[in-house]
Amino acid sequence: MATEMPNDDQAIRARFHIVYGEFSLAADLTLPGRGVTALFGHSGSGKTTLLRAIAGLERHPGAYLEVNGEVWQDGERFLPTHRRPLGYVFQEASLFPHLSVEANLDFGRKRLAAAERRVDLAQAVELLGIGHLLARRPDKLSGGERQRVAIARALLASPRLLLMDEPLAALDGKRKAEILPYLTRLREELDIPVLYVTHSPDEVARLADHLVLLDNGQVAASGHLAETLARLDLPTAVSDDAGVVVEGLVAGHDAAYHLLALDFPGGRVQVAHGPESPGKRLRFQVRARDVSLSLSERDDSSILNRVPATVAAIADADTPAHVLVRLEAGGTPLLARITRRSRDQLQLQPGKSVWAQIKAVALLA
Ligand SMILES: Nc1ncnc2c1ncn2[C@@H]1O[C@H](COP(=O)(O)OP(=O)(O)OP(=O)(O)O)[C@@H](O)[C@H]1O
Image 1 (tube, rainbow, N blue to C red):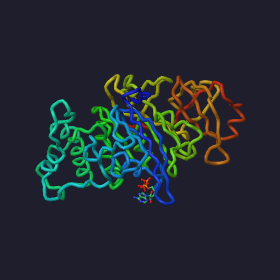
Image 2 (image 1 turned 90 degrees about the vertical axis):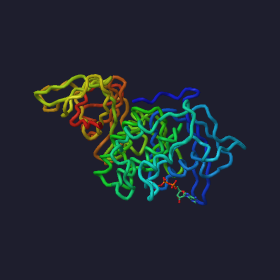
Image 3 (image 1 turned 120 degrees about the vertical axis):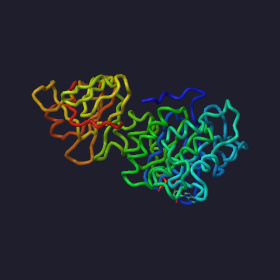
Image 4 (image 1 turned 30 degrees about the horizontal axis):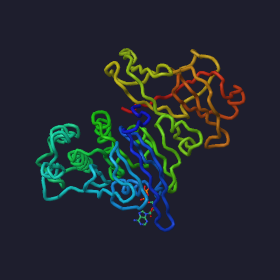
């Protein structure tokens, strides 16, 4: 995953203390200045409040905000929203209904010096796949198409920060699936940091490099996606869906069995999939419930994927019958959800060497 520890000027530093009656939000965050940071949490946890504060839509005294070396708020200094080089994408695309897509896009273009122009019209149109829609009016577009136009429009302001507030929440499953590949492309092809509000674990797994967990106005965690998903002390672990996201490199394709091989620092996995270019980076997800453990490498089972690992920690799971085991496989964290009985039978404890048998690998491409 692309997240690196923020260095001095490639970072977003945000410090806010916001009180709305009963609700208060306290955030003191240093986020990577590139890639996608997901702000994830239950309804009412403060995600939108934080995003709006970062956009400068509300002025909160005592706050501090710096985006890749530029201070947007500090003490008396407060850059109003229209002077912040940011793009904001909302749940519902707010396009001008009487204008064509092309005219709507034109609205997003700021008169910027060439050196400041980070995305031009042709690039935005190509990235979002909207070339065939330019002459249409917004009411002749599907919800997903409208949202792609809204994202292109936000990019045309050449933002130094892109804020996205649940951009897929208003779309049905099919439309979501349609638009996700475009968001993945943005992450891969543009060097614009994105703060992405969502309460969808699937969107987090596919898009995020860094994860901020908000819980009732408090930052419960902020860290690299893979590391944070594998933390046993967070609510993300204690759910039936708990699992990790791993970045692999395409190692080859077995056409006879229709299996794609992906290498990651912990070993190799094979997944039912067509061929992809060797060396291409692809994410895959391994759910804790799909990982079982054995003390020796068993080659008499139907499970294709086995990697050697070390037990790092064990914690309670979502039911009294289960535990969650955090494993390290070549520096890659994995989670396994097994029964307490198996834990005792295998005498598992931190430091013990095991084989992780991975029953299912979901490619997130
Ligand atoms: N302008 C405001 N004035 C008063 N209270 C507010 C204001 N904006 C938000 N709140 C309150 O702050 C809390 C956090 O709201 P926020 O919209 O940030 O949560 P969220 O995590 O984005 O939720 P959701 O996922 O439902 O959008 C809520 O209790 C909300 O009612």
